[in-house]
View 1 (tube, rainbow, N blue to C red):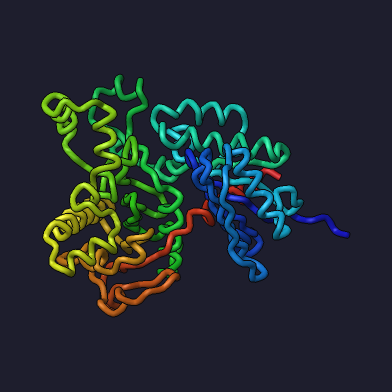
View 2 (view 1 turned 90 degrees about the horizontal axis):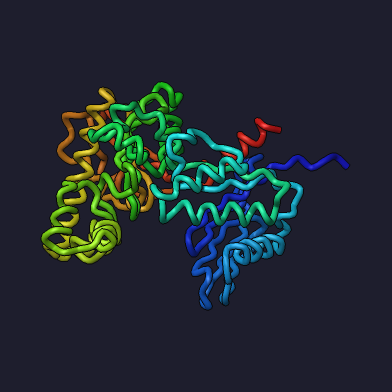
Length: 406
């Protein structure tokens, strides 16, 4: 028998109480299985697993899952039922989503003790995400110590930003001492979508300038020149930038001082307000764009104002990044809202005809799960809907790195 050539990558996205996973075969980019473990550490933990080859049905398991180690063992057991276990010789590597890589990590990286130490050192700038990412990595290492583990960083795609875009205008010594700068997030999505947009246009990414609008519950914009990010809307944290589901986006920093001095709010209370009780949910009580649009259509003025504020900020970033890039070949909408909310796309480019932007009403209203153009043929700038695929991007980067090192 000939030796098995490992071509599978398990992608893990570890949260504080959850693990999302996908198993992909990189020989043809096929998804073999997807799943989610949630409410880890509770009596009501749940594992949902869907095999995607051979016509298997979704399986659910409910019961206590004590920690991430137990969660990954449960995932491994489910994969094994489909002949896809973690002990398979066809598994080439495990790719981990890591939210914050700071300035140090500019590309996918094979994880060793030094990498773990640096991810841990970055916890103060990503206290909600990096600890959970570390837990997932260490758990996977314990289960498969012989297997390459690769970190793919949300911030890496944005490390090409020039200092003029990455620096805040505060005292340089203070900024450097506390690692205060604009890092950006959703980088795997922006990388994938900007490249897929170029492919949709039949061009090489190096020939295309794209404004990418990643619009989900979290939302971010990026200006991508020739395949390299030159600006992005999120900053030190994912709070900066566009109006989001529960995050405020841009606001005057003095609002924080005012809330502390006049409102008597603590730092933690302000943090919770701006990250979890602001954005669309703060404006109208809903953070689901489908529900907001339903309310708008029924004449709800509060929902209408929330929608208008959301669009106003989105349009500002389109204009700003048009100016940053100078020339734009395409504007690409992606993620849950960007891919599915036709009224958002219509409103975002309305009135920007002088910039060469327009959408065709019929094309915009049509639904699909493939990259597609929604602008008229005569439009100077293409407007596209490009479904993001962060897991495929992580798997692709992981497999490319492992193959390079073998």
